[in-house]
Length: 171
Image (cartoon, rainbow, N blue to C red; front, side, top):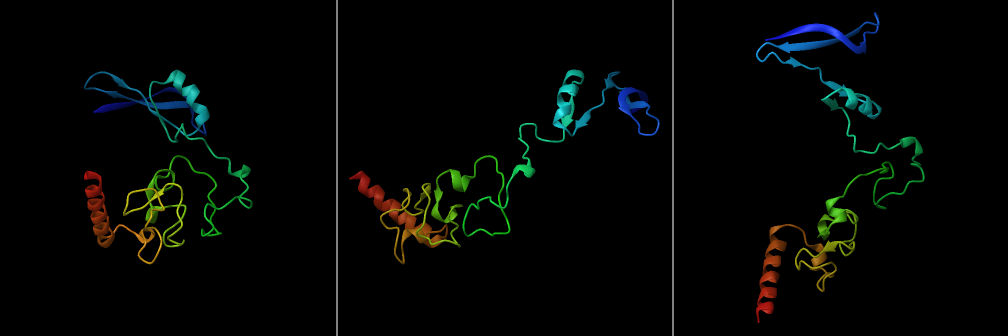
């Protein structure tokens, strides 16, 4: 079991201005356990990095903080005209799979499938059935590929189309 001893440190208790820290000694291997500090401010990293071997960050040091006071939410643009006027996106970090990489039309973030005409597509949309960039040659119409979603009916049509295109490529 570890013994707890009070020793001098760089932290003050509010009432007595006494510096205290608790250090635990492990009897099993006679190695003193050092305190581990949890840093809450980015500005404290340099100070603790010079003095301590180990400390915990209660924030992501790689993440740039966003100063919301400098953002003009009133004049900010909405990502999609069909989005709610009550919510505005003011900052994002990283890539969004269904916006920044090729994706099936029904998964498109720029043109939500339930809120926009199915015929509309972004430059990264592809046809679920043909596996080609949208729009394909069968894109429009009542049974057009623009209406394709990930269900059994469209999957079977995709399989038929794939088999047909494989036969065409083999001969």
